[in-house]
Image 1 (cartoon, helix red, strand yellow):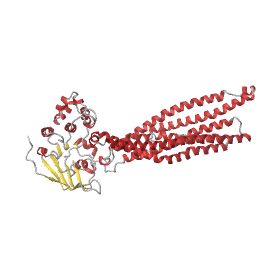
Image 2 (tube, one colour):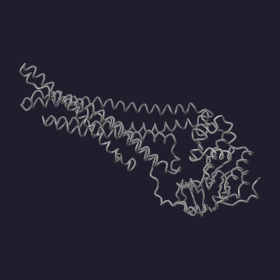
Image 3 (cartoon, helix red, strand yellow):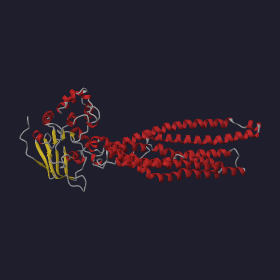
Image 4 (tube, one colour):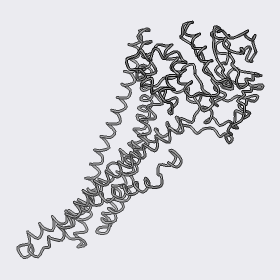
Length: 566
């Protein structure tokens, strides 16, 4: 879509299909009106001719109006079928386009901008709200446009025969197509908002429960979570019952208005008949036409409710996928540049009211160095990853990588040069092979085994019955903590980046395996590869060239180790 959710009318083939769907919907509605309108006249005319005697009945031409009735009936069936096919195809296309757009906006956001939203709520908005917005064409635009066009045609035809009857029909259609939806919408807006709110929170709770079943069992919180879900479901059910009652009342009022308007049209036609302005056979024609006209405006009350759902969904999607802040033109790192990392007087904090994480901090890491970054929890060790990739912004100083300012660095090119093992590295559902292929799609099996050897996981994979096709479970739940950590490390090594940032690479490993992993890791890297190891474990410091400690929000070089262990 051209401007995301701001334009629900895309150009090109989809836009033309939308116009075609509207045209077919109008054709089906007008064919239905014409069918009832003409049938009323034909039945009344045939009855009058039969009562008038044999001569009149023989003179009455049944063939032409009967053929017109059959034509309109066939046209209504074909137009309605075509309208269903085209409008549903367009709706599916719109839903797909909106989801692609929202995913494209979402994936470009820094993780810090989405950290305050629960994954279950984000998933629900991405799936359900995009569908509601995409269905706005089918559920809102089609009935509204059809009602407007066909209502004018019906009023015009009725007014051609009896102007006063046309006015009565227009008033009835306006009351049913405008007044009733406005009243029903006003009554249902609060219930609609409550449903959206409680559904959002309930889906967030459900995903959170599924992700923490062990902890819920350990804490004995199962009953509390069940009651919480039950209360949300009760609130949703009550709101839905309220909407259903409003919708049922609206349908009843539509029927009442339709019958009342048809009686009014009949009364106007009867008056015209008394004054000799209309033949008797036109009375049922106008009455049936009035009833048919109301079929075009009957869906508008439901369309008003769906419009409210789509409006709320659109607002929630825009909140979920805000536009990325404007940035300067991204600059690539020159191919021959040395990948040095330089921080000069860096000051960074997550929000203006929060304390500084780093302040007046200086750090230089030359390409090829092996550096350990240590410090207490919360000191800002992992912040350097967020700053480099632009996940968070620094407020003071300057940061350069490969000679390019980090603020204008082309972050999309960084994964080719920098491999990151984060502290909470995610393992994808599926096999070990799939996780390695996700990290490096072009890797062959020999490269996968080499990365597993370096991560000290190859023997485990060989002993497994399925080898590389061993399933890891969701988020690696079928692996131990140490095995999952080493698989994540193998995924990073498989890409052979020039820079490695390892956040607690040996977490969950015993001392022997920890030593083996570090020895194999450093031996497998080329001499010009840079390693920044963020760790609490002092046992791996001798493997690195120097140690940098964060003290009072600044970087401070510690004593250089005497040598790496053999």
